[in-house]
Length: 173
Image (tube, rainbow, N blue to C red; front, side):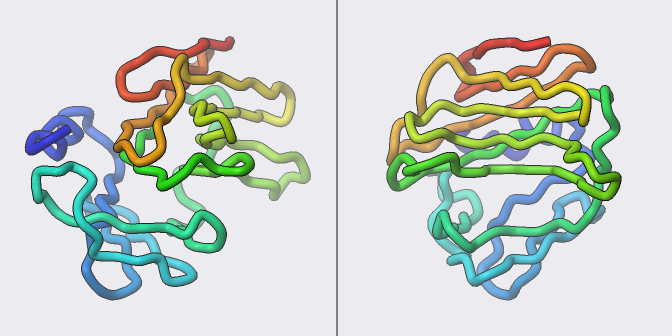
């Protein structure tokens, strides 16, 4: 990830990109200037970068009440493909499921959306619910506490996958 992370990510042509590397304030800036987020419940910003190259800064969340909200953007569109990724470093494995990135809506009465999370064994999982079908996929390996990891969830319109640092996981249709 070192030094070339920003360029590698830009090559994926994301619709938004939040570095979470602010050193003050409450705005989580979208590098593409599409949708800024808001830091909620005082996460620690301006921490040393997870990239190890001195590139930028990081944000530390308490695992309980700290989060960033982007508002109701990028609607969940049923079978539409999507991919999300995050660079994370957990101090310890969670006691229960710990969300990393989520998008759920309940405005029609049924939950619809997806969630990328880490379970208590360090397995990265993604769940997708379109109100008719609930699918889950898991990484093939576990996160190691104290180590930086790239976690990814992807859905191609029929196949849901979870990845951890380049290792595949179960694919579920």
